[in-house]
Length: 361
Image (tube, rainbow, N blue to C red):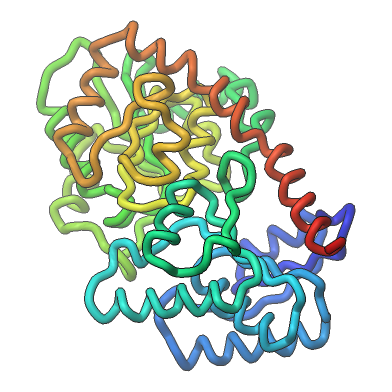
């Protein structure tokens, strides 16, 4: 986008925002945005964003995430920005109930009212938004085959991780070449299905197979917003076959030493992790939710299981270990199906064309 526009990146302050400045070579502005429902802090964020937009006078404001969406779209509307675009990459409200659900429903509708165009990043989200009447169909559009950003399949490729690197990492983590390694990548929180995953793996691990299995957890524990059950935390800590490595900036080596992704999330927009795993030649076990069930075709490049069903997760993990022909057929399809549908350059060009068409209109 920097080749065609002046781009300014706005987000909460921190190392990640500084990394974007350095990696992308763009101007950045730090504005505090809380991830929780915090009305007074949100008003301060709104005012800071409004002042920035009045100063910069952009043609386009494009927001991602629910909090940046409500702050950015309201501020852009107040500042009379002509093109106010919001990408929907998941709806936390799907798991909310009671008063919280009503508040989140209201905020979502207000975001869409303030936007001139809304981009659900999956067909499932598109249908969900229409079904719950958050906005009119005329504002909605899925870009390409879905996804917010596509995937760079030259970067996420098994060729990018050397055999020596894999051998060193396996030794560090006490993983044998004969182990069948399941991997999860993401935040270790309840609505990512971690409680069900740990239960499924623990039950699987009680059985004796010729091939030993390991579960590799790559991501941070978040105790504040959606903590795991105490039994789950205890199992992660005590089970020698569960390896938790925390947040990793480069997840490719961990995919490279794994055999299959397990991603039993309750809700997603269009999960990058499932595309990344596929590009790294890993089949996936995913829950039957929008995004996941658009990347994975059942029994072709992975398998789809019901949400919150630890027993079905366990069954599919066991099947991958025991049925080698089945596993290798899924593995063989994993990368080609990502390359043909979600290559990043295709998504980038589609977004660029969207911007140009809006401005030309």
